[in-house]
Length: 245
Length: 245
DNA sequence: GTCAATACTTTGTTCTGACATTTTTACGTA
DNA sequence: TACGTAAAAATGTCAGAACAAAGTATTGAC
Image (cartoon, rainbow over all chains, first blue to last red; front, side, top):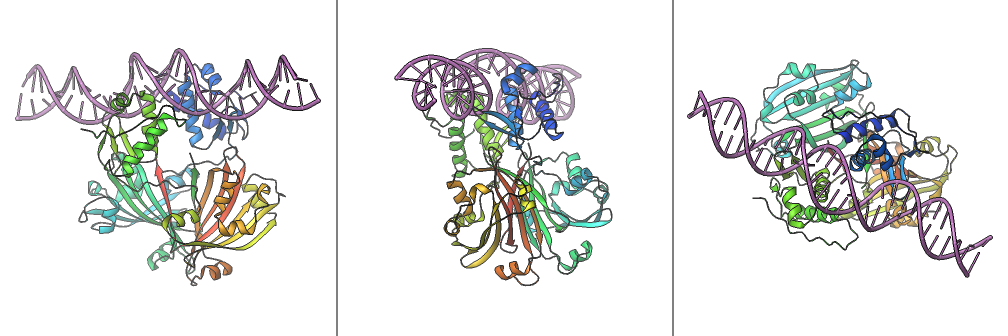
């Protein structure tokens, strides 16, 4: 009855088995091989067919459930959720977003200096007099201005150069230096742009900007970044997936 | 070294052991018994002390990690996260938010009628000619207008009355009728208000609104609600917690 | 005294096995 | 025929064990 998805497991790979399985099942749903509403092969049969233990298969399925791709009901079985678009809000920068979408993003660094800022320091759990690297960038896609990005980085990153930021996304630079943001706290709102922002984003006088401020931390709780971004509201929206457990 | 949190497990309770444990540990963090940065008792010791198996303890800890309360690092141990505010973005309405915050929210139903709308029907996976209950409400807090809420409900809820909505939040009404939204897809953006919205929200001509459109579904994938809300941007912001796994 | 290799601690992954709970289906009896 | 009970099917919970991987600390050699 249930469709048997073709899965190949590489036991010599360093990638955990449950994750290999989750990725391939997720791919089968994304590619349309599994249609919304379809019954999903039950976990015991799947485990037997792939020579995996039940906990491993369960964990893979659980991963998809928490992404909203599958729905489980005890006694009934597992079915494919009927919403195709279930992209989870991720800790990626707009740069990555655009690159994936096929645009040609470019960045202009408007300013790049060391400053002290009490409010930002507080948001990053740093002493009020910490010297922060303040970066203001203009992000364009196909020569169309999209966003003004203001960021503050903790003292450990004070030596990041202007050139780095022009060629790579800021998150890519941080990743290369071993900073891995794991938790972030975002606040989304809207306001009218300042005169400078309006000029940079080429906005008409009645057009608002969408704002997002974010504090990001790594796994050990060390601050990675504080950001205050404003986007052209008519070109950009923020998608959030919510799931209650 | 690590603080031993007092935990009592009731094995005769229908509540799963891992959940009992997670709740009590979460409480210990919320109450301040465990301070941010504190080392957390390692999972093997905790399992032994409470006479639970390691998988059970692991699952409880995993629950707290995914809530952002704990941070784990292999080889190092588990520590209490140093951000206290880790409220996950939840599927609650603004009404509930305000009630918790101690405000006095009131609702005025501006319109309440049956309509057909192709776009909304598509967003809810319903046939294009489905008859939807369209509700437009004005939300106030302490007599200050906050938001214009436009909602569409599937045919099953066509009999919800005006009075219900005036007294309870819409989500509370839906809950009472057994509708339990589990997954939602939100899009957040900003724009200038329409003339009617500006009048209702008493906005000056240069003030933008923050908009949120949302499709919500229950555990079986049935549509529960489509919402198109606009908020006074200067009074409201949306908080989102992100965590990468 | 410094540096590298080793041992230890802690979390991560995987397996086998068992029983509980929920829902549907089928069967048997009144 | 109708209803209730029992079996089957599926997910949920829990235990115990073993090994892997990562990070720290210790120890040993030079």
